[in-house]
Length: 309
Ligand SMILES: O=C(O)c1cc(=O)[nH]c(=O)n1[C@@H]1O[C@H](COP(=O)(O)O)[C@@H](O)[C@H]1O
Image 1 (tube, helix red, strand yellow):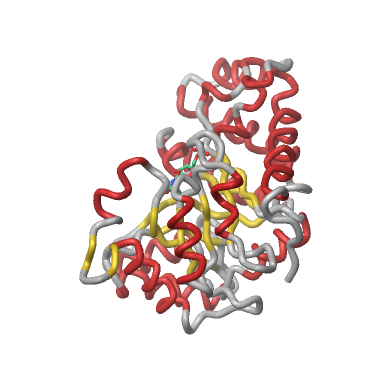
Image 2 (cartoon, rainbow, N blue to C red; image 1 turned 60 degrees about the horizontal axis):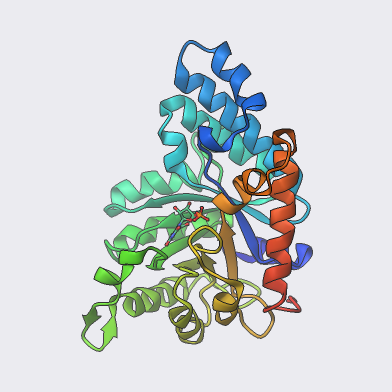
């Protein structure tokens, strides 16, 4: 019912990081993608097969040093049902390697529809004895804009199946202030959304003081990260925006609590395209991803030394 398993993975690897699996054909070296693209008449089928193989090799290269992955659903949906199948298989593969999987779907709707999203991404389909997980993620990114009845169905599944959610609070993008920084009474919209995370998570606390309801807070907004860490003591943060979007370890330092917990930092493109930046042999793309993940780990360790429960 909480993000305890993510926290335990962070402590085990001493690495508060998540690698974003956001593949595009551009990131995949020719030697790996060309045979798949040639094999299938349907370009989406070939690309989806290439995405899956690429993801497996990245996962193989990092699963012992990074506790979690975050596949962004849009990259897979872009390839229709073949891409969605690659997403499901990617999630299954990562979980098989012991990784915590955050499915980045940013879902939200009215309660009845949210129930369907909740069972799709965090729940099961079918009756006892003949049951399967549609997507099988451990946590899902969601939007809280519709309020409590759009979140409640997720919390039921989180309780039943030891799952979690991350609610968008202060996003990393340049325009996030257009809505999120606006005042709503005496609070900004992001403060109000953060306070709602504390309320929603109140009945769903885990062993380490954090609830099943996490918040997304961008690495590109260091002041708000620090402010929200103090304001939301039971809310674990997913921090995107490190690396490709310019967020730095120094700017993220305020997201951690005194145990070095409280946040998991995402990097997608910087890890996936490390082989291009390094200029190494394309066959060593997964090695380059591992080197970038290790570099990030050291970078974060410089501002967040000891991680313990
Ligand atoms: O929810 C997210 O993960 C997310 C929220 C946010 O505020 N900003 C943000 O960049 N993201 C996601 O985090 C990833 C960032 O990717 P890189 O900029 O390549 O590291 C993408 O999958 C984004 O969709």
